[in-house]
Image 1 (cartoon, rainbow, N blue to C red):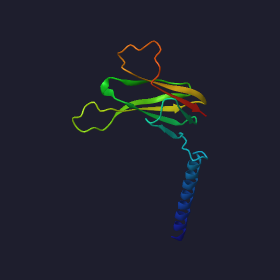
Image 2: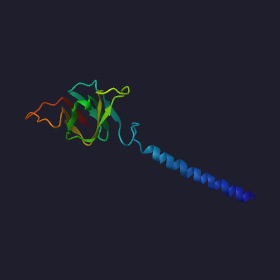
Image 3: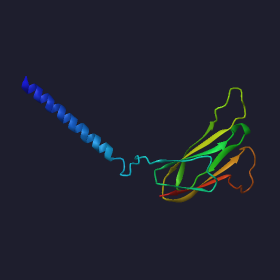
Image 4: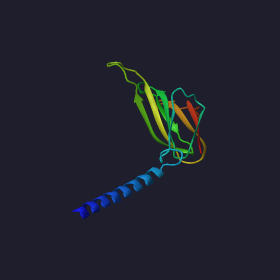
Length: 147
């Protein structure tokens, strides 16, 4: 009986040792800076003015929030740069009291920094059915510097 208990304890100790070693390997995968393996998230709010520059590491996510109002027929259209991809662009309506129409919202654009360098996110607030001028000036411009 004593032998069985010793074997079980030894087996439990071995299992615990393997589990702790695995946990140490997983914890060591994150970088030394404490940044998750997927990069960090940088938020750019509506208070940001056009011409803002954002510095981010390759792998970081940049979330840009711009005021919008889909009830007017206008929508944000974006031109991507060379150092990032546009992962998502989503209109989020603001909470409004019931039966209230015409309340605006926010356009949330998520970018993923893909390489080092500098390029611009250009945003145009347009009605898609209207013919734009031959070379319209962007309504929003932000430089993304990938490191």
